[in-house]
Image 1 (cartoon, rainbow, N blue to C red):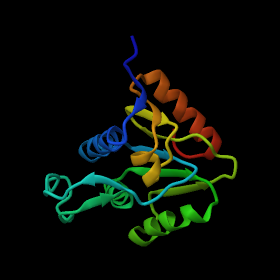
Image 2 (cartoon, rainbow, N blue to C red):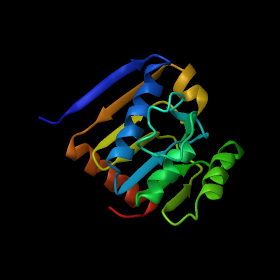
Image 3 (cartoon, one colour):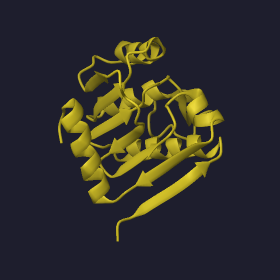
Image 4 (tube, rainbow, N blue to C red):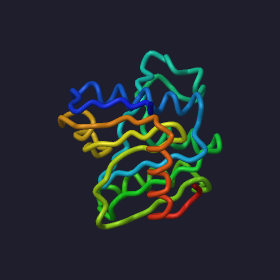
Length: 170
């Protein structure tokens, strides 16, 4: 039976906690390829390292809230290929620029598409998707419906959909 965890409604605290867990897991065991799909995306705080709890994951991080661009930069430096799909909106430009400043863009692929509406993160062993954008309001204010999939069938299906749509390694 495929493993599946579904939550139809999460509180404003549960989505950030789940995202922190996903990215901590990525830092411990990085995916070869990571897809981040969101029509609107910001350089949101993803990991609460204010107590230096996660110093062992990245010694260069200081006591602070670690931003999405910092986590993705660390993963890219460890060999993960990052694919980001978003809309051509001015809101998204600052996040894309933050990534470009922190990286040489070697392991990054930015896909811009006007009609994008789906949202999610796809790693080698999971697919997290739902109604939230990767913005402050999307993960902390709004009530969101999300799904966390670990079945190999669901992961393979999404990987095929994403690579057929935007290219990249399967």
